[in-house]
Length: 313
Image: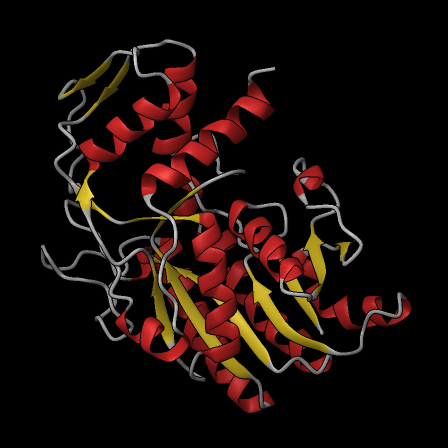
């Protein structure tokens, strides 16, 4: 059996590629030819890297046919997405192009005979919900930025296109994930970097109740959702539990540098700060059997060791 993974140089895609390979899948990893992170793609006898810009995703079936890789492909995981951070989230041209290429990805999956298309959505699709609301597949979505609107629209359009083409469709809405190959701008990775360098790390009061899930657990959830999930389902991806952000930060400190200085309350909450974020994973667990295996403490230790290996030589 084969599986295709787009956006193959990102944290979530890499973890998914590694998990698929460990389960006996041959993995076709699709990445932009000019990606600066192309070396992030795992190396293995059952992993093949394909260079293709997402703007040309409709050419994927012919490209794989020319390489003799177009048979027995069952799963298509679509992680590729531009404009995920900063001002680019509200660059509507980028987000509209993301929607277009997502629909084209479904068509490519159909042309290759894939049985299931799994698309990567985001917590940004929900916008703001009442404090204490666990995010479920049927929680009303009211996104507040172009990125969230783009993800919501892509989820809806790819579901319709998949139904037209006779492919199972799964949409996952991803909350806060951490782990190896994460971006350096995130709270977890920037915190690890500062603490390992012995710098003072300043934060808000850390009262936010947050749901973090380790990338390896998220990858298992994706594969279980694709293989066992119900067609047309929306599955939020998280641990299903919350802790104060302050507790996560102290776990990062203990794993990276117990003697480092951490200052809470030196940074103001930004306007409209979300104070509660948690995934409702009951349907995912019921349909697929998924239960997180990693505690945050265990996952952050692995992440710190990975960081040291890659950035502290």
